[in-house]
Length: 334
Ligand code: ES4
Ligand code: ZN
Image (cartoon, rainbow, N blue to C red; front, side, top):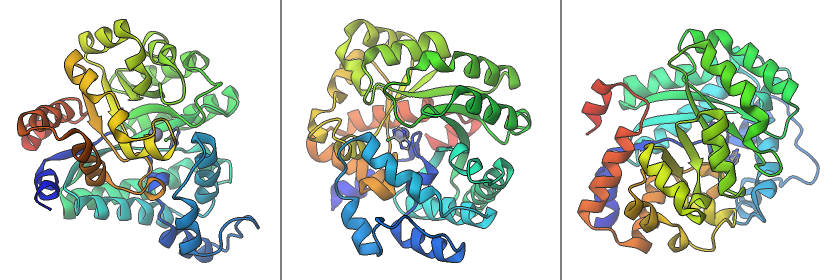
């Protein structure tokens, strides 16, 4: 209990959170009803059955199949607001202070929902989170790497004004990693940077893909952050580069166990990364699916690694410094 309360009081920032992945079963069914959505026939019928199904996933694709069905209940601006607000409230109770959150516009625009509807709902939740919970936030738009490149380009074009006006802060890349390597998205990443010089770039890499996915994301997409990056530990030269170029890895311990990237949190290469001087943050990824929000991930790490106070201070400091908020906000967070 005292370990949990120590970790709860740390000023936590989240860098790897899919808003659609925070859709809890107890919100999914009410939204389906509110929007008159018929879920697929084989889909679990009750909150309890669905929670049971979420306790085991074969791999990333098995999880994604459920994740994209979950997305289908989101239609109106209010739905996107409710989703994000529920995430902020639950995370505030776990000591979250700053969040840089992903969303997948293509999982909604493919069903006829306008990207402006999605962003507007999320934005309103972000404003309320700052006012009422003192959580600052940034929105990161992700492209779905399994979709045709022309669709990705069209999505990017539809987001131009949102980036130009600062409503969107960064571009990311997610969904099935193999066989969709970073090099397919070189042009998209160059385009996003042309929208506005302040646009930040990140990409999922090295979760199911090997260390070359991480290397190519750095070389070809010009990202300054890597989401997951677990498999970077396979390559000592890459590790030295991550440290030298101050690339932050956004690690997701409970996710990696649930998707069978590792058998246990204790197998994650945190000590290697610490020794190599690589910055990483600890994140919840898709908390409604993987059984824990940000503090639960901190607790899962501490239970295995038993870090001293000094190590936690270092991790918290690196997390704040690796955030995309301005210097004034970073100062408040420290
Ligand atoms: C995701 Cl864990 C993970 N990996 C890749 N894409 C994703 N989208 C949502 N969660
Ligand atoms: Zn992710």
